[in-house]
Image (cartoon, rainbow, N blue to C red; front, side):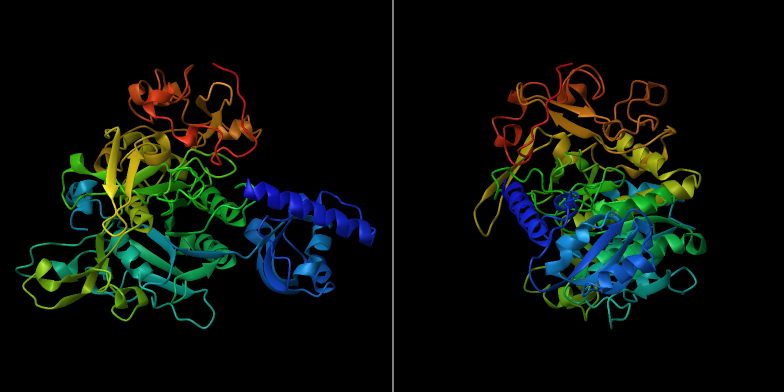
Length: 562
């Protein structure tokens, strides 16, 4: 509701500007993002109908702007522009959309066997030959990231942060790298009792730094890093991009420059894995944390990952969804997200002792004593704990690299489909957790918007032989406001891409298998059958999520009963 009011106010402002200036409207209000600043000089990403050329840059310069960077992969450029001229720039028929250069931020002793990564490792799957591009806060040197012969497996490092080296001064990227590809060498010494290995223990890491020492970056830095990953694909056999960073959703994924960039990588044969976000406890809009998946995790192409709590055991039966894990459907487009869930709570991984996160780890209870895994004394400077979907995403990125090691011919869509099909789909109906600090109790329902297609199972995925054809775009949830029932629709079909088949409704591929699990939970038929996805409301209670809440927006989607 608040966004709609802002849009109305902006539309009125643009009409006034156009009338005063004598300029035609040309639909300018639809070209400006809802969060465009209205005063001062602002950094914006302007998307054109085709890659920008000198004439486009000159047009902006003539109005007091300056070019900062080309982003040709998404037909865009970054400019510093007086906010007062944005409405006029939007009138240019070559301009498709203008958005701020927004701020983005960062989002295994038990986790490894919980998802059966240890079984995969014992069978010879360790990511050998696969390059993973990690777009994060950089990666610091660590023995666990060295190869068998001693050289670092961080084969390339580049900083997109002005004036900063590729070293991880924030501490987030190195922790993520350990989950992706740490080999546990610092915790496999004589008399060590625990080993902290990553998912793909011999994969190569391409470190592309976009977050500074405070964990902050911008859209343009992430897009530039994605472009570089694509450019380096053949050099380092980059088959996976891990994005444990994100920000809120402000517009449809069709217009969001971050989403367009991840689609560019996907179309170039790279699996893109994104953290869902950590806003699952946010009830500020009365939606119980639904509709909080961030960008670019809201894009239907990518694999979006939520976080599970492995309860510090290797037994999956006691695992529960992390209450902070962001839930779908996505804002504006209502894409079904997350796609998968994986361990993300209190994950032990690599530490950078000089980093900002490690410096504050002791007061937050995130450090571990050396005696926790070995005979040493004092606080470990090799490992510490972090929680979040940022930690869950590299679990899935590592799993994707193992699938690609096993079969390098797999496409990103086939990897996504196989991981989702083989995910464990046995969950409780609900679970609750009480915050020890605030005393607030959070209850989670294990529905499709909370756990997606299920809980990552690497060994099951490696043993699966399904070879899907077509697009694995996540479906769109459609709600009938008259009945309150929700069904799933093919996102491509809704976008008019009729000739692009979806992998989900191919009975010749899946047979009797279902991607979203037990029909008693998801409806009395497959999600593409003739039933609603969830059935009657008694399954989900009387939450306003399923009513006329902000999750569905002011424009409720009406579809005929099947």
